[in-house]
Length: 271
Image (cartoon, rainbow, N blue to C red):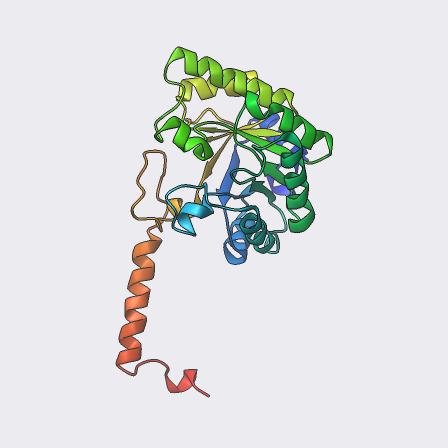
């Protein structure tokens, strides 16, 4: 494994190699076959089937309503379109919080039914024992600390985490607990760049940032956000790499006009 281009299938070992070599890891979300296929062919390392589908696919205000059955349904579609990337699946709210055994069973169900490569859990110290049990069974786990959207009602807002010393130290403890429990990588969401740099330097596993600065080992964004499809969502950590909402609207209006003016279909487009 000498160069990034030679990687035929991204695995946990691949990610460890990329961190060691200082090669940044790219992560995007997908919830359907076509999007997953495009991301995979473009060379993305990790495709996250995020419970963010509750927001951008289902139109909910939070991720909390998303169910296990829905995560499995979307992941099945995604994995059919992927040949190279690692597919990681969010374990939805209340699929692992009830008990360690419940989390273990649900992680196993996701892996058994979807052909995914790994699962992702939110939380640090409080879910470390669950992560340990899952990883000991051979299921790769990605952690997620800092802002954890499934705990939004506990936090009360989507504000940045770790700004004060006490909370920063708590996040540091969470990071170490997740690594010690056997996770292969960890998402750092909406924490100060200086804190993310400290965590990244102290862990042997890769860190994946979202709103956590450039010093993380990789970055993740929600695909509809970075493509400019979610026009009402403008957090500072999202960069728009396209304006697909405008492009799609223009195309649809042109289609409507062509239909109404009998310009579509043409003779060549008819049987």
